[in-house]
Length: 238
Image 1: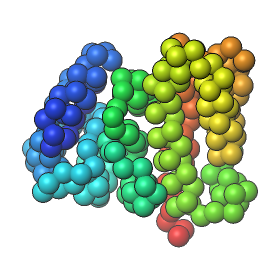
Image 2: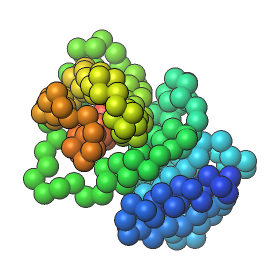
Image 3: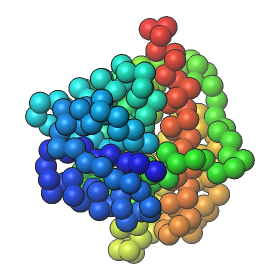
Image 4: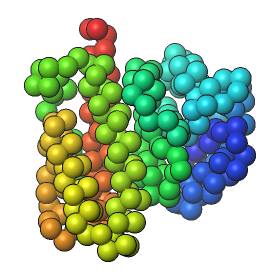
């Protein structure tokens, strides 16, 4: 699987490349900024997944995302935005442009691993169980753009939770970990992600650490990505 890492800060770029490499067998390419990445894409590079910093000279992450989504050759390519900014305006703009995922700096191995796994081929027999996006929009009394923003924000919470819940467990903060997991379960239920909510329920009172939690977070993230893909066409009506 080919993965591209785009960041004008060489240290951040090297760290992210190392984290990707530590997660499995990947062919990793790099770009010093959005313009460099765009030139490589135009020259024929076809990554299966792209991690891109938000703030860069010449061509920013959002500008590169806009170019990618406007080009049929890359419009379906998973595009993960890497940023230290979590303000609603940035999330709204990224969602409107069709971002596939969000990693918040300082990034951790768990966030990267979850995204790589989520965009790999789903396990055989995996089924996305969720209410139709139009039903969620009607129930929450919002529009498609706001639903996509909610999904994008929840996706960021899920990827951040991977490392944070591990850290809580390591510090012996079992109650805090349980509360975080319960908030994520409620988030799934609110957004109509029934399968993911059930997966959190199945963790039980003692499931706050290890592979079991990561598996549920991956299930939830995969569900968010699937729901986002279903909700994107609804933007055409707004």
